[in-house]
Length: 484
Figure (spheres, rainbow, N blue to C red):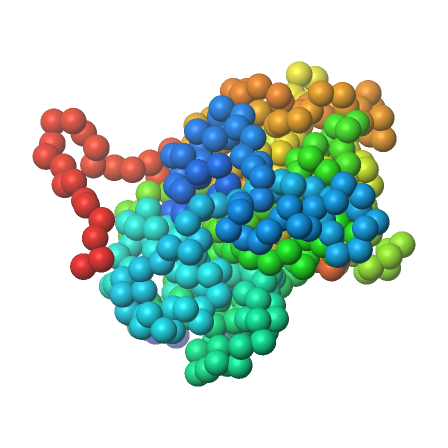
């Protein structure tokens, strides 16, 4: 090659150098926008959703997972009062809760029982769901030591710390107290126990935390800061304090249900759970022979900035974050068939969000191809820091089954939304997910009450990424899960 270059004149050398520079720039640009493969997932949601199959059954069947507040959380009868103006009381009896949050096998993770007692149950739940997500992805968790694997977790609740401090028992303030309640350790402990060397951080942007965590994980993968990433969120409701404050603020629905987009919308329902996605660059997933569940083609995060108040939603900012995610993905609004809305079920927030969706997706929509919108909060309630990843897992499952599950509690469309002017449809029954231009594409929105907004574009996995090696005439290996 050197001999050939020596025969070139200066102008030819300049052209060759330019071609090489352009090729390197194209490679860098392609890497910076490379799609991210979702190769595994784990979840724990209200209504008994302990894995992808049970969560999908809940969604497909239109199950309302809201229940009375469990008796083992606190004496709710002593705190209930239907009048939200009553100080120190809660004006609802219901929410979305998961079972067995007190059950944990510390020896499975090599944790001493005394240390486990001092750990926020959110840390314990994240360990369990992350292990299950890795197994779902075909990744042996005990073989990841020293690997460049990142951890990005949304977490905001501090109920366990409140309980410890309010007890007045100074004996609880031992060597495990600080690590047990620290948000930084929610992600750090997972990285430590698995021996992971990639970035590890906990994100708190309130309700948008887990979707912001997914966005940051995608950035880290594209920047080669890690080769694989765990991204998601966790939220547990252990103490009544925030319930009391939110009730006094008149933010909670009296019947404990998110009636998103409905005229009866009267506040949101608090809920808990955990969701974790296992992510790789699509090229790495293909090279490694991983099953690809769906593909993240774009994402964006922004802030409300100047609004009418700190916690009030900002329609133009929501519109902007969606446009940014679409632009990154190289998609037009008309290519998107479904939006998993933030949709908390409030009189102010829902119309603001739909107005922003109309501004982005309303123009140039083909006849017969309405944009379908829904919210998993109508099934589960608002998982707060884990809300975004819950909606994202719903979308992944819907893409796999090529079916949009029903949106609940939608009977009379709210008059605060100009439905006749917008090409939108809220499915109240399971609907086949048809392609648009040969693709199934969805957007997921999550807006934090701190003003931080996130939007992620997810599309169906490419055909060549389906699981291979399932021919019935061949001998197959049956894997049984165990600790070692």
